[in-house]
Every structure is written in C-alpha cells, then in structure tokens.
Image 1 (cartoon, one colour):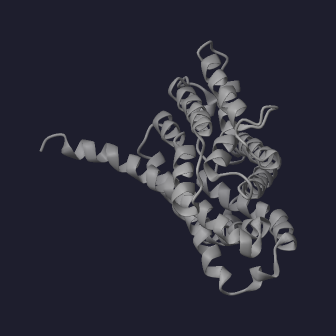
Image 2: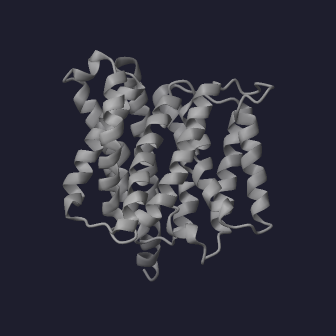
Length: 295
C-alpha cells in the first residue's frame, strides 16, 4: 500500500525510543531491588564498572585523541556522569522512582530554558516550579517526600546539566564514543567509593548476573537504541519523547516495586513533564541546546 513504508519508518524509531526508556527504568527498578542486599553505593559501583566494560569493548576509547582544550571538559563530563548515577541511586533509596526521575529532569530542563529567554519560556518555568513546589516538602510537607532523597535527586539533575554542557564540548569530534572514556573516568572515581560503602554481599557471585543485567538495561541497550532513534528522528521530536521518562519511571516503580503516588504527586510529575515537553517543542532550531538534549 502506498505510504505504508513511510509510516513504518516514522513509527519504528518512536517505538525504539520508548523501548530504550523502558529499559532504563526497568534497570533502575532492578537496581533498587538490589539495595537491601548490597546497598545503593554498591549497586552504583556495579553498574558503572560493568557498564564501562561493555562500552569500552564497543567503542575502544584508547583509539581516541582529544585536543588540549577538550581535556578539561572531558574530565568534567566523566565526573558528572559518575556523580549523576551515584546521587540518583542514593535518592531512590528513600523516594519513589517516578518522583526521583522528575526531580532529576529539572537539570536538562534548566539547561534548555536558560539557553533561551523568550516570553513563552516563562510558561515552562512556571510549570516546572509548580511541579517542584508540590513534590518537595517546602514547609507544608504536602507530599511527604524525604528531603534528603529529594535533594540527592536534584543534585543528580545538576550533574546531568553539567554532563550535557561538558559533553557538548568533549564530544565535538568523537560523538558517541566519548561516553566510553567518560564512563571510564567515572569508574576510576566512583567505583572505589561505591565499593567502600557496599556491604560484603557485593562479592557474592550470585549478585554479578543481576549487576550485569542492570548495566545492560541501564547503559548498553538503551544507549544503542537511542543512537538508532537519533539517526531517524528530528532532535525536537526525540527530546519531546524523552520528556515522558518520568511517567515511565512512575509506571516502572508501580509495576516492579509496588510504589504508589498520591494525586498531588501525580499532578506535580505531570507538570514537570509538560514543562519539559513544552520547552522542547518551542525550542528554536538554531538553539545550541538542540545539539545536546540527548543523554
């Protein structure tokens, strides 16, 4: 039938990006199920070290050459990558997965909004602030969210923002392969920290298959799928689809971890999703952020 191949070519990358997001959130749920056994820092160490090994095998970062002016951004890129993962896993010890992802999303959202000061962006700022107000225990404690967990999720968001900004400069020449070297830097710093804080159970062989599954679901599989989608979707559409990640995180938390959200928390999460989608859809084509609004 005429037009069918075109429709298939449009929907295939959309399906791929949804599978990638489901993979990431399923990996986070699986990681959280390991917390009672090895602790959040231990799971972070497992994910980073095993994910780094996978990425190193795929991209062979020892063949990359970076100019002198790219080395400092590369260092910040790797450190922010590790800090982002470390703080995110610590945050989901005490707050639901969907809320943690929504709070973390404020990092890239801030990067997008601060890059453009048009009047329409004020709407997305208001929506984001409203979402944060009802998610965070600011005086009224309306949503019963652990303050330390929320602060760690926001810290992970700040790490994500640095990751985006430094990754743009560090990856100018090598693109996707840069993440392998960044992950190696993160491993050098955060794997010893995570191992030192982990329980002795981390050395049990029975933990390794689960840790490998977390690394595959959270790193190797979604990263590969996102690269497929990026070559077939406009960046604007890609960013809009990625804005649905907090919702998928909430669903994953409900399905795999038995987590539930209050009505107020659900509205707040939807407000942050709307802010992210709106900022992406109204982004100028010439905006620099459009080049780096991927993970």
